[in-house]
Length: 305
Image (cartoon, rainbow, N blue to C red; front, side, top):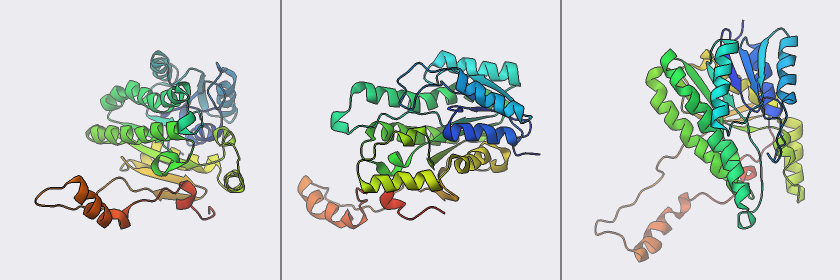
């Protein structure tokens, strides 16, 4: 018996890294899995291949599970519609979507090309919209459905050189929140994971100094994709049927529930503010509560468990 017995799960980016581990674990827990992967590079700069998704589907079937492969892009709306038709026709329906598919195009913002911006937004934000939009009506009609979408600490905390990625990933946070709110009455859930894990995307990060070398080495050794998959599969399953609208970080054997934006401090001036009094009084009073400009490593500065 597994937590996904009798369920059908779509896993995007399912041929490598976190996506592959999610697909394998979902199948191990009883799900029929539609393994989606374009089969392209981590930068998204090529046409892709059907082979990688099929290899994972074959691995699931060899272990006694049920899986089919799909090699279309989450950025193509017609193709995403076909994914759900395939899930219905070949696997009998759809009950959960795990969506770690992604690319990186890292560059300092003042040097960023329009294409670098557009491609990352398209895969991460529009891709999340597409897989949610073209399954949401079925989820609502059947009174059941779970989205496990992926953000990044690059968005919720910040990392230099990833403005496109951060913007897309913060957009996914907002999308998940609204889907969860609107779906609550219909049994539709949506949650977010910010993963720490070695993957092809992480491998593309340039190592420019000793600090970044240590960071990448630590991730490679101590933060694995299969550890992230444990949380993703749990959130996709009825085992967490009362969990929705949350943001989690998965880091090694640690799981963190992250805060969401709420007021920290407020000030009022009965006669109204002026630019001068805002600068002299309001900002000065609030300054102790400001967030600094530290990157992810300044927040998660200790070794993973």
